[in-house]
Amino acid sequence: MSPMSTTKLQVALDFIELDRALAVAKAAVAGGADYLEAGTPLIKSEGLDAVRKLREMFPGKTIIADMKTMDAGRIETEAAAKAGANIVTVSGTATPSTIKECVEAGKHYGVLVAVDLLGVADPVVFTQKLAEWGVAWVDVHCAIDAQMQGEDPLELLRAVRAVTTQTLAVAGGINSETAAAAVAAGADVVIVGGAITKAVDPQQAAAQIRRALDTGESVATTHFKRSTEANLRELIASVRTSNISDGTHRQPCLEGLRPLIEGKMICGPAVTVRTFPGDWSKPVQAIDIAKPGDILVVDASGQSPAVWGELATESAVVKGVAGLVCNGAVRDTADIRRMDFPVWTKLVTTHAGDPMGMGDINVPIVVCGQRIVPGDWIVADDDGVMVLPKAKAVEMANRAADILEAENRIRTEIRAGSTLAQVLNLSRWEKRGGGSGVG
Figure 1 (cartoon, rainbow, N blue to C red):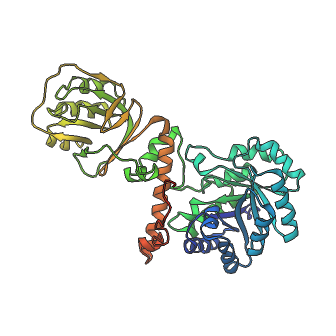
Figure 2 (tube, one colour):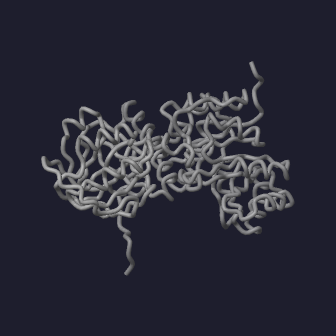
Figure 3 (spheres, rainbow, N blue to C red):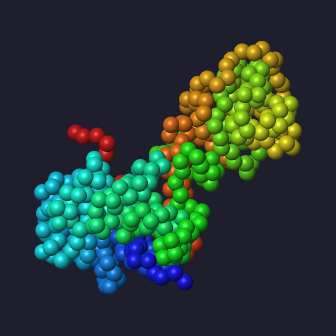
């Protein structure tokens, strides 16, 4: 058996509900977590009582108060220290005077001060300055919003490790598959959030990451992985349209388009077609242009006659087209179902039109009020059809995965005997006063 790694595992409790944070903290410690972090959202929601409660429950553990202090360094460091924190974070974008004040207060109250490099313009040069100011701990941090765009912190970690002997902690989408790579890149502390806090079994998740740290080997995981262009289809296929909507501030689907075959889910780049109602020439020609895995998106003004039927379906199946989204009418639906070809359509009718050849292929179209251009990603399931603009597809897919992971954790808590209202503490978070305007 490999010896235990000296790398510490820190779990970031980025909840807004203290009870949920404490339950996961207990499980994470049982799984091998060394450090417990009262995350910034938790401190903003619950105040330093979150730190006090963690200290009460885990008297022998290292507790981090992720304050990300920007001003009033002495006051905030003192408050966190008196609440029971061992380590307090200050933002690297704070003024030098604030960072130095935190360090001085830390010395006085017996806590270490960690500087978070999030948002720092030149983090490598800045880290060297921090050593001169007496900072012994640095957090290399890839922000959640940056993770959604496919970024990771390990390249920066390597660069910072090359210029300093300070304790380096790394955060930003680390999971059991990447934890060992973080150690190899120079991390003294690996900070893990969602891969533990959103896990169905946080104790098992922490144990798997602990094993990866100790053995230096990747441990496979299904969730908590963020996509790039290279594996976009795989990630999109793991979520649902409702997750995509929730992750993009409730973006609506293409209203009124419904599946012919329930239980189907498709995703792929769009081949767009603009045609007139009943003119099936361009939709059929688009099959020849489509690549395997593409989705045909046809705008026929949401009207009949049909622009798609059995023979078009036969051709699309042979070509490997993933499915059809039709803002218009289709027919031969029994045959389409027999061939198990996924279709979402506005209308079903008996009669087709004629191949007049009007319209265009692979041009921008507007369907149900949403603009779709060639190469945009289309995702469709029983709930409807979602459009992921090509430039934002990676981010939207990652945000959808993040929503799904959070729901998996909530589902587990409900099944353990809670209710949705209790888990989300809805009564506490009801809107009271305020508003979007002034005066």
